Length: 82
Image (cartoon, rainbow, N blue to C red; front, side, top):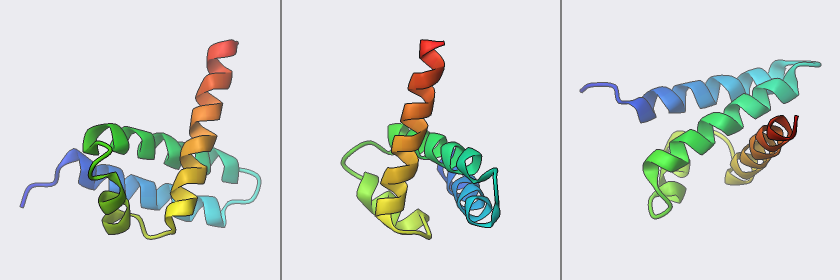
């Protein structure tokens, strides 16, 4: 079976989540990256299948998914203000 972009996103999301948990001062950077990847995945998957995709592909709670996505959205908003 061919690897699609969502499989790659899921792998990268898991990597950033793990790095976030293991990192000291850099943990916010990994959370922002995970959130950005999650936002990208959500745009591809669509709202109707998002919860199912998260449950299948994220190895951490949906609440953490929401936190990461909010962090990334706020970070992107702060960049636009500069």
